[in-house]
Amino acid sequence: MKVIVNLLILLAPALALAAEHGGGHHDVEVPKTVIYQVINVVILVGGLIYFTKDGIVAFFAGRKTAYLEAAQKSAFAREQAEKEFVDIKNKIANLDNTRQEQLKKAKDHAEDLKKQITEEAAQVSKRIKEEAELTAKLEVQRAQRDLRSQLLNDSVEAARIVLTKDIGSSDQQKLQKEFINHIEVTNR
Image (cartoon, rainbow, N blue to C red):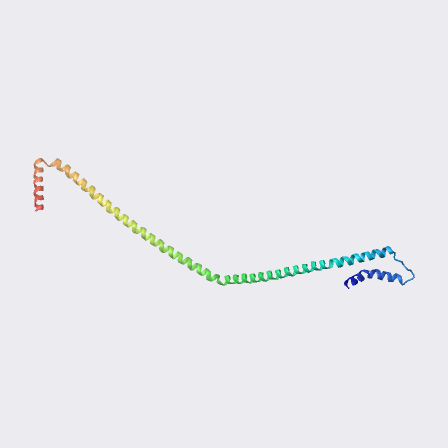
């Protein structure tokens, strides 16, 4: 049925031309060669339509399916993009809303760290000061001990020099007797 309609559509201009010339007093005769060529063209077109219509229909149906799938993917991607846009917009709004709170928390944390560092520094300086005072005391005690020891050594040396020069043998014997008596008294 479609083939007949297609043939009529293709042949309509030729029929109109023939009808126009056929009604007048000039009869134009169409050569047989042209008629055969028209028949061959009609057969060719009909054959092309008959043999390729399923392929063409399948091709365009496949294209339609591909376009519909692409449209669905595009719609899905658009929906996803819109959702992500809304999420990002909400996150930005949330960040704007919580910005002051976050800044306050950061400042409070910085103040806490500052206090902690200050306290640690005070403790370290106190410990260093105590250690320095202890070291100074120990050094003073050591210096005093060294001075006493040196003073005693110098005194003993000075006494020995004085005793060897100023004391004679009789004085030396007398001192030895007193020393022995003194030791005997302390031992009793």
